[in-house]
Image (tube, rainbow, N blue to C red; front, side, top):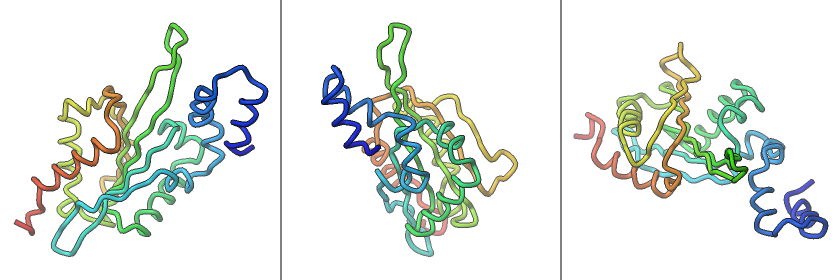
Amino acid sequence: MSMYNQLVLYKSECKMDYLEALKHTKYDLAMNIDLGCHNLIIKNYKTFEYIVHKDGVHGIGISSIYIPIAEFIKAFEIDTVQAEISSHMDAMNLGIYMIITKEFRKDENDKDVLYKEIMIYYDQFKLCNESSQVEKLITAMEANTAMALKDRKDYFIDDRNVRLIRWEQDNIKQDRKTLDKFLKDFYAANKPDDMN
């Protein structure tokens, strides 16, 4: 059932407020999974071209999705997720790919509480660390108190060339705009050695 039809059903048959129904539909885990891995990557996506190096410019791609990273990987399996991200990075000329997640969870009082995560994926065979500055970026993100990252999980522990890292984010006011500003400032201050 499409999201539009789901909303019409809520509006006509349920007592739920329209905006509450909209929120419920937007954050519905099963409906988001039904969109498929590729569509989740491209649905709410932007490229920021901040990685400037001696061989040109690479972008940082950021998708915003409504499914936790663990559920995203469980639903599509890690090999499929990696293949879809890798293909998207090639198509969009990306050096780094990121996902921001949003999900509502019930607290002990049955109130909706917003839960957020950030994920970063990179492949040094696409763009080396010296050009992407990704290791410095990860260190800066983890040190940034406004970003408030915690509970890091590494998905490719044995492969130092391909990494997928996920953090929970305590500061729910952070969004793609604030991440964009952080990335812009970081890359303005951290040029690759071959660009200095």
